[in-house]
Image: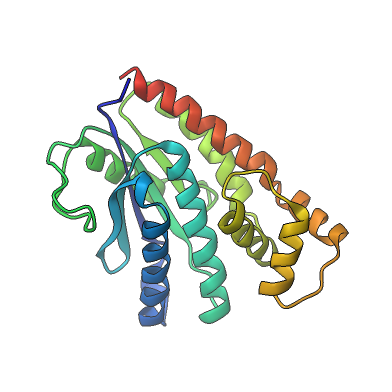
Length: 237
């Protein structure tokens, strides 16, 4: 049974006005969104589009893809801005679930559509802005049901894991997610990728320690299970 409820995301840059190199930041963000829209074309209903200088939005077909896209953009933006701009840029996310009142006329531009799905996403990002748990919470979900507190309690724990990754761990996770997504990690293949992209010669033992230290396997499993629970709930609506 196909749900009538859509999934919208709205994201903005935390403390964007304090960032000096805004032009190269825009270029980095544009390239990341362009790649994500291309790679996930079949799973995205309305492309992730920059609507304001520091904000972008879009509509995604399922929760697993939603969480994966959030994680990909988060880790890539942090690693690239740290490397290029010498400062780590972080996003806050609002995930909205609800009806889309106006039809999507142009998939490539997420502007012009409206409805509770976007209102809920806006509400969610405002909740992150006002209650971010000392910077540990960067995502919230709003569906206007009694389940929201439960869903957000899981997201909060996931955020604590993700937002404590060091620069080195961010590098590892970014490369890992780009290659494997939420699939099982192949340490041998990851070793080759890290050696190539970071221009170093890591041992298999070092790679194994890196993967373990990020808790990425537990993190991904939690994301997948939450996505499945959310999909079961959405199908009943």
